[in-house]
Length: 273
Image (cartoon, rainbow, N blue to C red):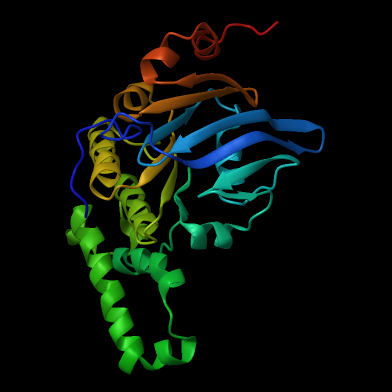
């Protein structure tokens, strides 16, 4: 873990802006005649928490799916760590340092918490299947090291008491925490969180907010998240981009976005002319 930082995540100690980790440039995505995203551009700077918000159907999840390669836009590019790309498969995104959680929990329900988080280390395993099956020599040493890292994540997320519990038997809030753990096991440069607090009660939201902040500050992980709870967004985000009907209608620090009349109208349901 790295030491916690006191300065804003998107600003260096010398006052300069942090470099751009990912840039979305003029991206458009359509399904048949329906446009999900229309000419959207924004960036995510290293070390920040970047929120993507908007009413239902605004194109938020489609945007995350473009970033991690699940959808391929008809127009525009994604630049990640200085590399421009138009198309990338999800496994390529994962190998390049992009991890993802989902709006609906996507875990192996019959597997334990430990094994689910361990599955996040798969891309980092160097020994082939033959050696892994035998669990001898170098393969055993590699597995021990990966398990050590997984145990550190379990301790960090305070889920030691459920490490051997099948996740299908866990309450929803803990399942979301396990899914976060699996994403962290990939040691991502960029962590995409799709509604990490959906369906949670107030206490669970407070816990998840704390873990997200700790991941950002202690691990130094850059985070982009979709979240409907505006209180959470305004409290933990460095910058916010707002989508509505697939278009960008606001972008900036939380206080600026909160005062944007277009954003206010979108959330109040003001009719569009």
